[in-house]
Image (cartoon, rainbow, N blue to C red):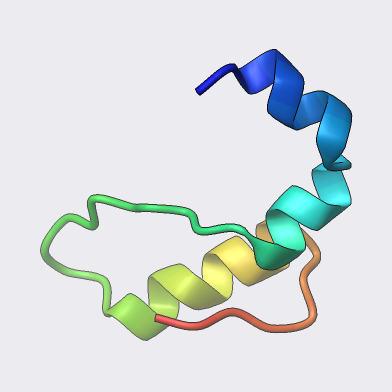
Length: 49
């Protein structure tokens, strides 16, 4: 898969809104806490886990 080709086809906002962020979460924080932090960091309307 050519990342440059993908970047030309989709805007960064589209990639964030419809994409998947895979996080290797350490033990300790809950999945909800990590999801909420990502939501705030990226200024998203909603996230899921």
